[in-house]
Amino acid sequence: MDETEHCKLKTLFKMTEHAFRSKRVMRRNRLCSAAIYFYFTTVLISETAALLQQQQQQSIYETASTTRRRSAPYRSRMGTSLAQSAASSSVLDNDFDRTGCTARQFSLGYDISLTRFAGSMGFDEVIDWDYFTNPYDAADELDRDIVEPPPFDPTKPKRTKSSSGSVVRLFLGEFQGALASKLRAQGMDSRVLVKEFVGEAAQEIAKNEFKSIARMQSMLVEDMEITDALNGEWAANGAGRYLQGKTEGSTREDDASVVSFYKLLAQKKAPFVGIIGALNLAEYDEDDMIDPNEWYRFLGVKPPVPGSIWIVYEYAGLNTINGYLEPATIRRANIPMSKGIFGMPVAPPSLPVWSERANYVVKGIMKGSLEALAYIHDKGIAHRSLGRSSILISSVGMDKAEAFSPYTTIISRLLMKFSDFGFSGDIFESSNDESFCSRARGFGIDVRPGQSSVAASNFAFAEDLHALGFVFLALLLSSLAEVPSPEYRLPPLDEDSLQRLLGEIFKKNFDEFQEYCREEESWDRVVELLDKDDGAGWQLLQSMCFARERASELQGSFQLVTAQALLANPIFN
Image (cartoon, rainbow, N blue to C red):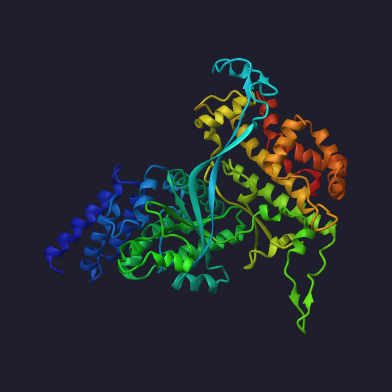
């Protein structure tokens, strides 16, 4: 290497170091620069350094750019939109992302192939309306009296929903190449779930998903004292993955980090769906030979939406509590008959006895869900959008649908996982959200914007417990109901109906609600279960469904309404 080339290398080295140290560089690019900085110090002694540095110089320029020419107007630039999104949030701080998930970008085709379109999700804004005797005044808001029934139009519902207009599309995919081989060699699943976040609101949701899940994953690393992750190796490998794959054709270092991360998720049975990284569609964007109609032919959906964000998750199956909310006899009746030796139809086997199924629901699904909530609260995260479709019924084995079967009663095979953290946030920063403060004041809790307090944290805990309580209520009254025939229809058990039943019809009188349940013969054994231990089951449901009211009663004290405390309820023993 002559003196001129050596000078060029030194200049490029300083440029990279300056980019790494500059506060003006976007945070995502700062992590990328950290990986490149380490890479340059390694290759300075290589005979091929000049060529590699020239390639990297071009890559640095492209990575630092916030815009790039598109080869076709319909194609998505994942790399740009992800960087722009991450730049405006704090998810890339080292303390919040020791696993590298927010900086890691997988290449479509080389790293991941999409195998099937799994569906789409929309988002609704839910508003609970109340009427007050006096007009709004921030100073006297807690003294206002609610008017019942609503004076203007009593027929209007107290709860309304409106669509956000944003959409999240779900795809099933698989890792490819060396990474897939390494995962399979370790007995781990190479399948992934990929979500495309389309629209402004959905992209804000994607940022929150990154921030909250990266934080919990980092705390998982700290709890297990994973040295390679704590010293920044996982984050550096993840940040340099895409560039390394483009320049060297190998991602060996980051492959090892991803495999280690998968082992960690499995070992700790993480109660949330982990994020592995983002999907970069640059190859698709740059290839003029790709026909957009191929998306219709192979996946049955339209091509990627420009500016959308793609996130890659571990695969935990697609079965949620929402699909479990049906009497077991009806689920059995819907199972297609198999064929015997001579082609004769064979009916599905008989269901396990009711007591075994009840034990699985209560000590498996319900306890596992409450433990998951206690876990995320312990990590300082409030979910804020818990519901039937955001709680996955997964399995520790490769068959993720195993635990969802109406025949399954083995709790040790069950793994409950929370998903959809798009509206989540730091519990102790809840008061920064004006809508949260407004909801708290609606329950008589004096929470002022930007002012953290025990009362604010207590209400953040209570909102999640309230949401999970109504999930438990529907789960018990549907999955354990004994209907006389598959055609029998139970009373409505959707969330809105249950909310209206408890809040408007029974005026939050839980004793009257219990009597209502006793009148339905299909719930006789459920009622008997909840009556045990002096009504411990009813006490659990009441504590959860009215957790917000309890938080209001505890205002001014240092007592908390927590999921961890509710796990001591006798129904789980």
